[in-house]
Image (cartoon, rainbow, N blue to C red; front, side, top):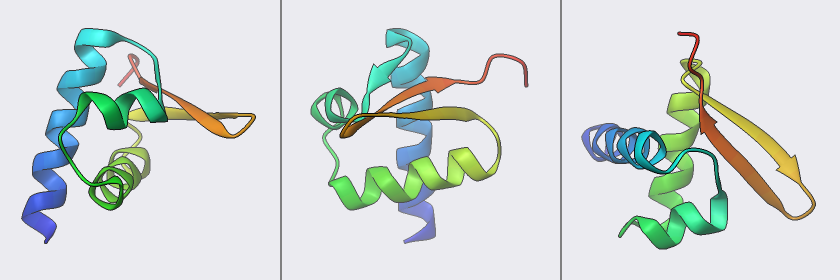
Amino acid sequence: MIIEIGIVAGEIWHYLDQHGEVNFSDLLKGLDRTPDNVLMSLGWLAREGHVILVKINDDYRISLRKDV
């Protein structure tokens, strides 16, 4: 499972690099992955300080942290 999380984290990184800041719901639509895998991978990226997550109403805005 840890390998899958790492793979999806890389896919998220590339998606955000290409699309910039996105809503979580749009990220899910753009990746062919389960919500659980995307959430676990986002947690990994957030813990390592690679993404910024901002809650807006019932969704999250996600972007790459450019200063790392």
